[in-house]
Image (cartoon, rainbow, N blue to C red; front, side, top):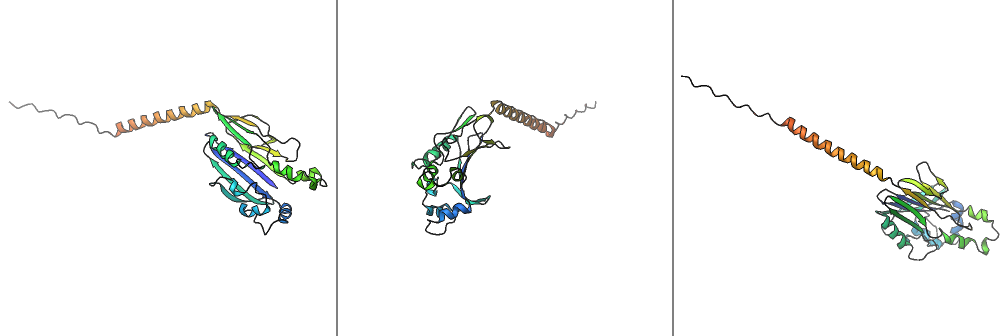
Length: 240
């Protein structure tokens, strides 16, 4: 099973939060055993037949965009949610966590004076541990159970990376944490970035220079186009 949580934040605090749920053929066959009918794994409404409503459509904002996901032999869906500010992200997460589900989203995002901080305040996919750590799993090696899951938290934050505990930082600066729901101590993503205040000052100065240059050019152009005043005609002296 693949569960990816992608958080992408811009300098102004806006961004997107994407949740991807996808399954390989083996996992699909396992879950379809108890399903009432055929399941379209790219449709979250159909996926609800499995009886696990942790990521059911009604758990996301009404304006969320749902699209099919088919990559690397996995088939599922991605729910994409846009936010206009860090405060809106926090409110969205709080609303999705109100039902008290074990599959809650324990993400926290804050920003102060150009400093962005991502953290978590709970376990990710806690229900996976509950469902696979009982008597039914005693005969299955824990390593094999862990390999059933590809759970990742992926974050792209603005500015310079100050500190983090990610497992990987990709070439484009994306932080990647790999989560093992069966581990004794689960990963707790933490990251801090900082947007240089100097960069804002540089852009302000550049903007001011451009405005002044444009004003000078307009004034000069008007002077060039302005017609020269005609010289007054000299009056002829009277003839005596």
